[in-house]
Length: 154
Length: 434
Image (cartoon, each protein chain N blue to C red):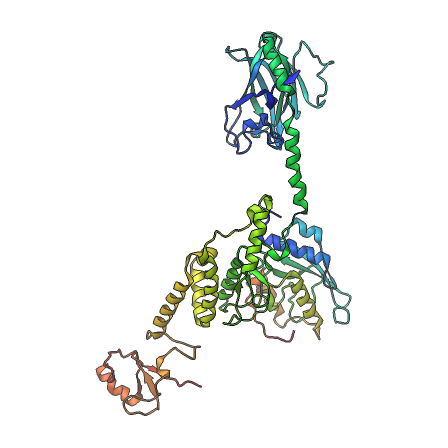
């Protein structure tokens, strides 16, 4: 523990608690994460009774060394990116806690739960209205996008 | 037969090259096992040849020498051994090129390829002393190891042993002394076990969770309890508040997002602080505690945070925006700003600067309701004809209706206070909605 940076110490702690008691439908590639604590891959299953039941998704978390004061960069990766009004086809997620409303009291676990609940509350599977334009013009890092949060219902 | 580099026989060692920190040449003859196992490593700028000279307690007849020539990834591949009798010149007694991890130089009068020394590493290269130099190696009291070549690495020597017997020219007194020295009880074993003990304890030793910051999991130096009941370190809270200020938000509890007020604010947890300090003092032998942040009994640091939290809470959002800009322009020296600037002073400076800006004529305010333009106190009417239609405001904050303003503009001087203004100064006056 001694040679760790503050962000790594906190991530180590979060990893341990996530492996020990993961939220339903969420699993973490522990051995992959242990190699590089600043980049996590998390498997997520669509909650039962929702539009995404039976599907599984992959989330990628990238942490800066300012974590937990700086929010992680969270995107969907892999072959299956959920079709959702707040998820762009390149995996970027429009969720306020990932940028402006981030608080150091939030954790990987809290972000996973928020995303599960965001998916669960979806009523109609469709892409965001500006998907085609955004995907062409956006930066690789979703944190560089100036998000405009207009839907408070989820 | 003894190893004459045993620390009990007090050998001396020196080297022609500078060593890398904590890899000094004296490691090779150290009593301490962990120091000894570090070995010698020359400084990275050093290139072969490097000489390492050992002075022995008495002239000896060398039977064999074992040299471990690798240290981590460093490796030597060519060595030359010199010996000296009394104060004569050094004479080369052996030279060898090899690729193994170590080398054994043997006395060719005692050993042969078929009859090597006992208990040796079979993988080591075997080399014999030169026939012609027997005078030197049978009565050597000083031995020099010259590293001639390395495998494109830094010159190094992991470990060395020189086995032999006191030479024939030694008196019986000398031989007895050496016997006595070697029979002294081994202190080393005791030291080793005492060294191992704390290591075993370390595995079980743990800092209690309550001493750690809820957000960063580091042991807290100045524990601050938040309104939500969570306790974080002062530095964490400062960082958070600064981060929030960069979004233009005022100080709040990171867990609940509730803004701090006079009754609901972070407080210094003195009881916890004293328990942490007690714990750290009691466990000061643990190496893990060495890196933990400490306070140095400076009262200001504790008062600072409270005044700072109060200060930020007192300020309007406007101040925060300004502060955010200030912090940003200060080139991200984040932690130092907080430490070096006294917050009370900063508050005062900010307030002064803001008042100045607001009162200056070219300040356009889009948002604020109160305390911006002082005309809000007076009645909104023309100072001349008391009409409240179509009003204009001039820099001295007096109001004029359009007709009167045209009159006043002939002199460009306020008729109430006599302050001069220019033709571009009058601005349309808007009523407050509330």
